[in-house]
Image (cartoon, rainbow, N blue to C red; front, side):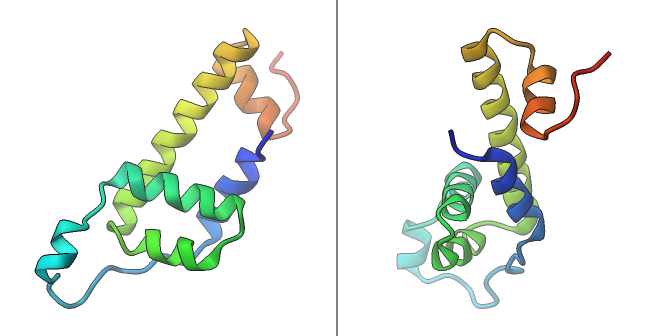
Length: 103
């Protein structure tokens, strides 16, 4: 299983680009990515330790949008794992973080 928490820790620790300073060209506008594409690429690149893809995905959307997308991805991953395991999302989240079961 992919270490989701390790990946998310890298997201927090990573430097994110502030965005493009120049206006995008017509070609760039056609290649624009949404925040979920950016988040999926960013997290998968983090897992694969691919700095070039991390940097690329960081430039697709604002840092705030990327943060939101990564958060949404984390929520969906915890929900999917909880369903797969037949456990509560809180139990799965605590397990992934290495925290003891809630009392």
